[in-house]
Amino acid sequence: MMARPSWSWRKMPSPRRARGGSCRRLRWTRWLMAGSPARTGGAFPIRAAPSPPRSRDGPGMACRAFPDHEDREDPMRTIALLLAATLAPAMARGQEAGLARPQMLLREVVTGMPRGERQEIQVLTASFRPGDRTVFHTHRHPVTVYVLEGAFTLEMDGHAPVTVRAGEALVEPPGTRMTGYNRAEGPLRVLIVYVAEPGTPFLDLAR
Image 1 (cartoon, one colour):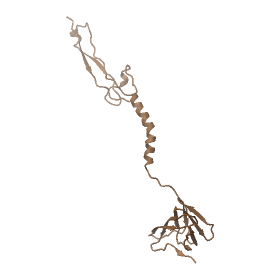
Image 2: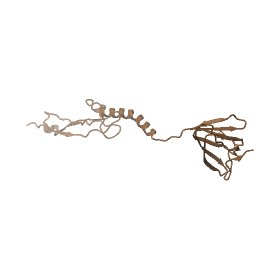
Image 3: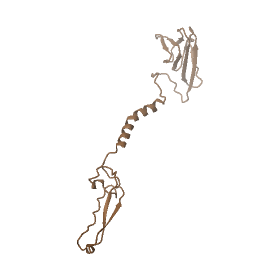
Image 4: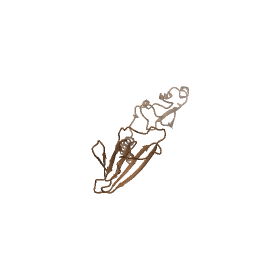
């Protein structure tokens, strides 16, 4: 009586990801479990199935060993990548919109700044009613004036009058006789920043 080969189905795990693509289906491999040709009487010779080739990147089987299962692109992954590329700029703009950034208001090269190792910074405010003015004076170092409200007019010896309005700034040079006015019809408020050696007066009366 001729021996019959026994058949067994084993579910093999999916091969590991190989370079150049990915395997997305389970491979079913049929293995022949039978005796030697002597047991079969040579009527039904049985040969062991060849081992599948291995990937260069690891012990897993290479996907290209199975031409009937080609690599396929996952459509959901493609959609996710497209959405990420589209929404990323909008998200970046949203994050930037919540950040406060400084705006350059005035940049000017000056002379006469203090040279000592220790400096004193004075921040002052001044309010003018229409028609008010400052005393005739000088400064030992540059003075920065920022207009909060109204319009500020500065008159200096040897210079034409300068008027700056709310949101604008100017630098008063040192050693120059000057006076400031509110020639507008409304109130005037200014913010003043002065840097000098400790104990230096803000202004000196001019004669």
